[in-house]
Image 1 (cartoon, helix red, strand yellow):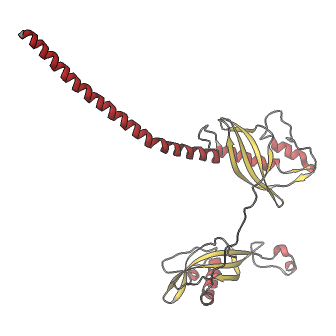
Image 2 (image 1 turned 90 degrees about the vertical axis):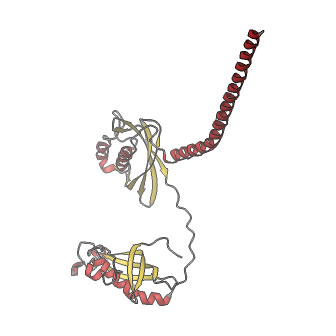
Image 3 (image 1 turned 60 degrees about the vertical axis):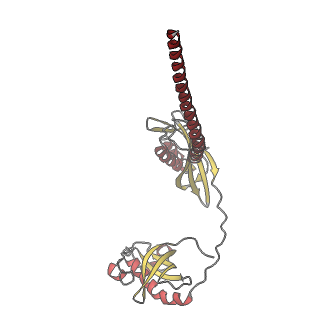
Length: 312
């Protein structure tokens, strides 16, 4: 009987200890499962957001990172090709054919689709975009201008080991239309401040054109240095000065000036050339935003930069 009770007691002890161990093990597994669910629940929306962002960016910019396609070099190659392809003249067709050889695969038509008639002159070539298909193939868009028309040339490119070739016929496409441009309502102008500032601003632009630092410092705020044009231009006219209403000692003003630009590197025009418009100094109207600062009762230029959007 004693032995029987001993064995019964040992079985009872083992059963109780094993039960608690299983309970605690179950709790650990349950909490681990809860933590995993919570973490995944928080992480999933974030991952979807970032993945969507990356996908959108990839579609918009046609990133080459997925295929390691050499975008910069391909863009330069396509720009050079477009400059040859979109300029032709029936009086010198062979010159174009010779230049095209550097871009075309062996056996391609030497004029690459041009019938040998007419004349076209294009310029202002700029890389506009790229669609990367794989590690070897992409389509590069090149912006160009001919006369008053802006367009795009779509150029298929094949790349291998840093070398490129035009892999198919290009396609002409229209450039995007200009956006609508609503006028900005006019600002209230401070006519008294404009009259006060005008001599100082005019003197500044004369010195700005000459680039003489001694003269410039008469118009530039203390502690500031502004570089000039070193005589490349001269001030023909301070056409307009817009000073918004205000009382602060620092004002943002807009100045519209006309620069006289020499046509032949010198302002001197001989008597025989005086009636030739081509050699007269050109006039370029430009707009600037000046930050003006009042020091000791007098206004000085603190900063000069290009003006922003025009005010109607």
